[in-house]
Image (cartoon, rainbow, N blue to C red; front, top):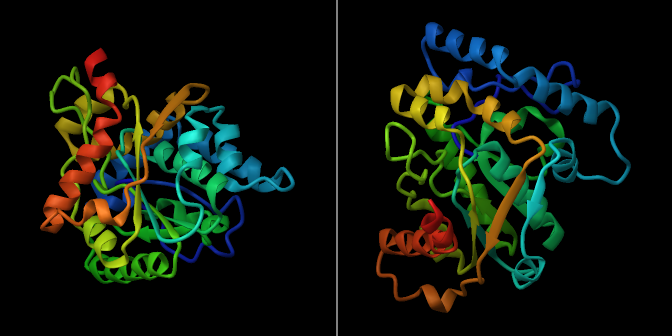
Length: 291
């Protein structure tokens, strides 16, 4: 769930009113922070925070955060339940996916994997760390350019590796950033930037089965254009994109699990991550043909 940030502080004891989500911490200059904060306020951040606070104050008994988020956002998640059931319900598992929307990708995928097995964690940017109820699942990555980010991320990646080594499931978006159209006018299909090698290293070291998942669709043309103009504008529009998806279908294609033996012929981490990317995007080939 790329390019997110969290306000400083320990969220574990935060009240609903104290929780505030923003991408402003991803930039360092006061002017850029002000731009992001202003656009977020003008668009849909307040609406999304109201939904979150309503769920905190009026929870449905027995409902998980992920299910509640899908319900409150009125998402029509379309997926093949049989394909999900073919994934291993125990043992080391790494779930990989493209990242066309941002926040919605993580919410949707956690909601699906939760149905398969409860021992999953999500490797994601730290904006969600402000929600205290997500602490059991979240491995927050700091994608800012602050000096402390590197040390924080080394520790988080070590925790992710240990979780999978213990037989757990890990959800990761290898790009780490939201998909963007290669066309500056936003007319072509949005694609992830190059996938990082950490996912390949993790898969190699743990011997985990890999489950590729493909999200159909992408953010608005405005978002694609803004992404080419300035990163600040891109960050500022993410909550607008989330709100725009309220009440819409989210189509998810789940691939066949890839066992450890099928990955051994990849001779390097780069070769392995490219193979995994190709397997993931192959699930969306029919979408590309339609564009």
